[in-house]
Figure 1: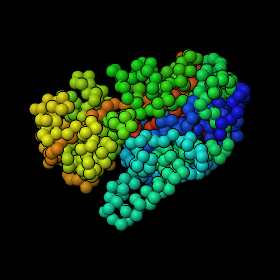
Figure 2 (figure 1 turned 180 degrees about the vertical axis):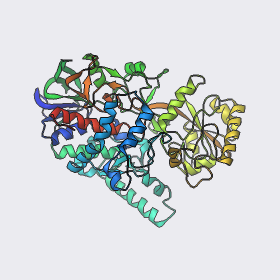
Figure 3 (figure 1 turned 120 degrees about the horizontal axis):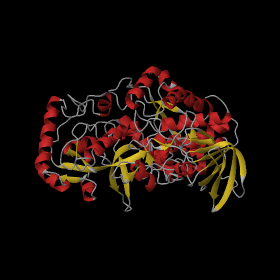
Figure 4 (figure 1 turned 90 degrees about the horizontal axis):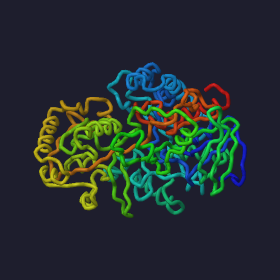
Length: 567
């Protein structure tokens, strides 16, 4: 699919970065009849989006409305106002809410990018005015990677910890049936079919072709681009913009060690993935001490933000934690490397787990959203070392719910202790010694928490009181789906660290994704979307899909503006 890159060329729109934002911009541009060129610094598409859950937060989306989940624009506005206040330009938020359903319907009607409603999936601050329990989250339909043929290799795979047998993707709906494969004939047949499909795939491909979550979104975008024969330059980083604050005329690319100039008649769209692995930007914008782990694709080194800074663009918001965060555990891999496993929804909210800092004290509602959990880590760390913190559970919890990469009912949890992933002890006192906590304090914390398990009321942090908590808990456990005792030895501890899954600081833009200069004026011919664009949420995290939703919507708005069409 590489275009001929031996000489300069002229296009309507040049797009830097083949993640979900960049591919959406390229696809919309092609559908609108523009001559477009997409350049990608690596040899694969997808970026961080390929390793994500693939969810989009789109209030008022038609997929959910068709499924009977009605959402009010006024309610969504109220929710964001309560959550964010005036931390971001209200015009951007209004544009996002107004355009979101339209952009999704546009893609669904004119390409192979298709979405399904999530149904019940509560907003992350479900205790706030305007929050919704259902209807705002959508996910991409699963995608058959075999449709891409040999080009399937171009789709960046998920992290290994998200795949079974070294290459089989599973969705949330698959997990219970796979775990309970011997519980019923239906589950056994379902699991057998998945495994048979995977074995057949491995005869031809390096991994399974049944794509789920973010990989499905990336696969669908890439397939749509491929069908439309949109030219993509791989191994072609953008190195310099041509122009100034009065207007951007194109860019210079490094293609195979040779620099070429691309003139862009209608503009350049920066969608290079943000600055997740740029040390200078991390130190400038993130909390101190700067978190050392990132779930961002390792190639996201801040090129887009850096290119903008060279032109004198505005960077915002600087007065926030500049990350969208998740607690992660460090996973020793069989090849000697280490991976990161994000603790999103599968364990923290289940009954029988607590999180403690180095003093052995709880510091947070463990069932809070992954973003809010990490914000509580940062706050706790101001007075008590809380990086890392420890997730504590007992043998009953580990067997029923699993913990991190230890799946429920694992027959040999001892191997995770031997590898150093888990810490195990026969008594709470012994466990405290192994994790460096005060034994009396940790014991007191557990005794107090076990008292909450009897009453079902967490008087310290309110665990289990919100819709989000209960949604991720165990609805069969009474009286509180999120609180259970930590009482049956052996006891286990797992260290978790803060890691950014995206960044919120980026290039300031207007509602059409036009990059703003330090003077607040839009720079003609320069757009930013995805993580290169400052988050419309101002560092807040309203619900599932806070990154991908705006990435798709503002990519759409950028292209429509470049063409001169009102979105």
